Structure formats: C-alpha cells, structure tokens
Amino acid sequence: MRIGELSERTGTPRRLLRYYEEQGLIVADRAPNGYRDYDASTVDRVLQVRGLLDAGLPTRIIKQILPCLDKPRAIHFPDATPEMLATLERERDRMAQRVECLTRNRDAIEEYLAAVRAKRAEGGRRGEGERRGEGGRRGEGRKQPA
Image (cartoon, rainbow, N blue to C red; front, side, top):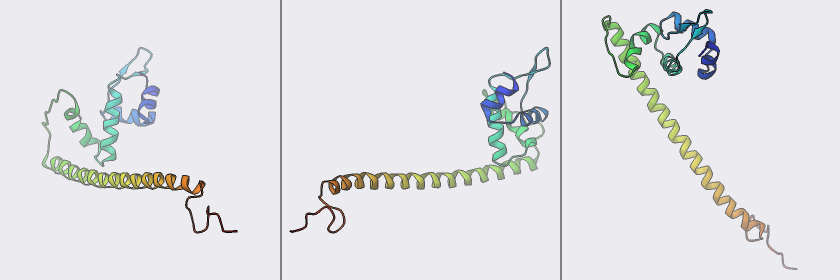
C-alpha cells in the first residue's frame, strides 16, 4: 500500500510515517517510480509504535523492543544497557498505573451509565402512570372534587 493509504488506515500523518521510516521503526519497499510501498502488516506496526510513543517511550527504545512484538518472538538484545532496562522497567510500571487508573475510570463510567439507565427505565414507567392520571406531583393528574 502507498503512504497515503497507510496514513488513512492508521490516522498517522504522512510526515510522521516518513519519520518512523527514518528511525527504522517501519520499513517500506520502493516501487520503480520511487514511491514507498508498505506491507499490510505495517498498519499494526504503526499502531504499536504510536501506542508505545503515547506511553512515553522514546523512539530509540521502541526500535530496540519492536522485535519482541513480532510473532514468532525473536528476542535478541546485544546492546541492552542497564539504563535501557531501567527505563523499560519505569515505563512498564507507569503503564501499569495508567491501566489501573483507566480501569477505575471505565468502571465508574459503567456504574454511572447503569444508574442512569435504571433511573430512566424507572422514570419511564412512572411517566406512563402520570400520563394516565395515576401519579406525579401533588395535585397533578388527579381529578379535583367539584
């Protein structure tokens, strides 16, 4: 696929895709006319790179851990420094905290939605009775003595 299609499918600007290629994060073949030609698997790779960047990892670390994300996993780190490992451990811990926070927020939203739906369902039943003159606020819907 050409760079425009990859950009559309991943929501990533073309300029950023070219940068990922310069950094060795993605690879493109070249057509005879010089256009980049990306494999369909590059869509997943770009999404992985973006997720790791969003998590705070620098591109130099991402480049080193990308082989771990391939299947089958081919793990080989000839240049894994103690600093890189410490950075990865910090980022892993930070991601775990974010996951916990997101999970709490998701659960809170789900509880809110359930409460709103229950209240609406209850209100809908009550609303039907009010329209038939069976309830509502004081005096509303009731026949007043003549």
